[in-house]
Image (cartoon, rainbow, N blue to C red; front, side, top):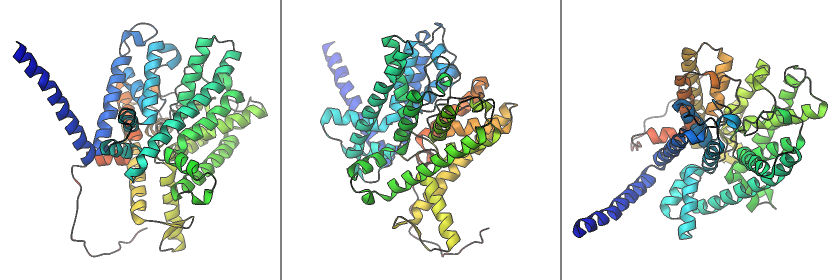
Length: 465
């Protein structure tokens, strides 16, 4: 018996070693596939926890479709929900969602690097490759600094937001535990662009509350601008001219879309009796700021999006599809992708041979990648929209809005999601997963092999346009 026990005991470390070797191999050969596997595993765990009776306020088991959808929405920091977060889930269920939001916001691969750093005081090659897959860092030497930037930025901003929001909830008559919980939950939801609201009645009562609205605007910006930008700006904070091309493109494009979105939404909704119309001037300004920033990916809304005009829906569709910065908590095709496409169009219109911005030239491989990301994103949105049209009898504009919101992990909703059939919920869950992990990550993970061709064919230009 003792001999059998020792054989069994020795087999366990061997099994663990084999598993570690397999993970190391996948991490080196295809980090994207491992990223998808880990994300899917986290969603499965979240789904199992939300399926427990203790997770609901009523004590009944949540339907599998609802548990899966809300777990996916939390881990993918989307915010689309099929049930009311504040009333349907118990404290345990809300805590499960909050953990999913935190993991999804940091990125599972970044979290793995954090754990490795905490244990060994250094980041090994495997952890660097995993984090590079999540944070879109090309040079592995920068991953350590970027991971530290992720840790510092997330903890500091979330702590500041919590400190700001908790006193506000206390002034509204909430108990200290309730104010702390609401402040913490909303702080993480804002910074991670998660879009979940744990307040009964949502954010509608705070449409003119600058104490709540301004942290939403600032927190969303910091969370959606991207960790590489935060790191670069911090390092060269005294010499902005030394900012990288990515940082400059992201900040300029982000600011332009934000200002344009705020002004356009204000114009479209200023006289809408169902949204901005009854509000005072101060409330209209704040509502315009909140809804100008929320398409970046936060999904937090202080007015009923379903009552907005169709022109506003179309504008929000475009803003959500673009999304936020690369390697951020935001989704979409990313503002840098949009910027590169615009620069390519401008260069072609001018007849320029090279695509240039801020004294730098953008390579053709970057343009091809931008086109691929945009096309894959548009294809996913188109296919999903067509599928939902077949599954429901809803209008195209409503379905398109919901689909883009899911793909871009925004969370804004016209009210369609809770009424979807289970098949529609599964479809949007898959779309949120693809949107969070990244269109190019999904494409790379599904690729069976990388083609390396020695012989190149003769060059010839087909007629375009």
